[in-house]
Length: 190
Image 1 (cartoon, rainbow, N blue to C red):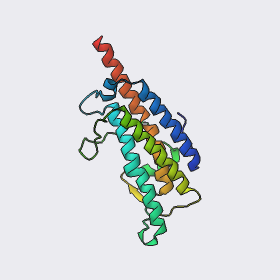
Image 2 (image 1 turned 60 degrees about the horizontal axis):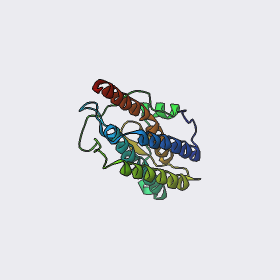
Image 3 (image 1 turned 180 degrees about the horizontal axis):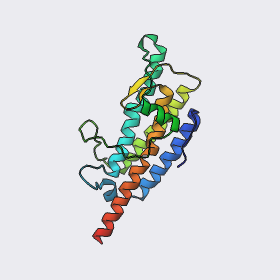
Image 4 (image 1 turned 30 degrees about the vertical axis):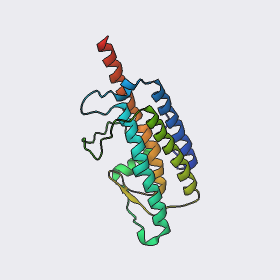
């Protein structure tokens, strides 16, 4: 999928919706077993990856868009922090580097297996709807407030919004790895 090199939030949101549609199409092709399959104890299943995308968008990225907007409305809460070198690079490229990022398993970070594909679909629809709301809220606003990302440093509301699309696009690499692992398992079991 092409990298959007724009900061136009409407274009970012439309590109996100195309990315989301691809995730829904991929989900539609998978069996429940494939959705739950973990190639190893150290890796997530496709279902866990979907959960991660939903949770990170709703509980971190889009929540921080709202916090930045509200902090801009209350001058006492402003926090202006710059991006790290990694943050500058990611936003200059409009993409995460095509490398595997591994975070050690932990109860706070490792997503649970989803309740089923309907909960995944519902979660993705909620993210899409929230992106649409944020697109409208950000229209015509400039954000001075930044909130820290663990790796990228201080991001403003627009950057947190853009990060959702970049993050979803980055996980296509993981999706392809997990699909390949499933296919290899199926071939071994034949």
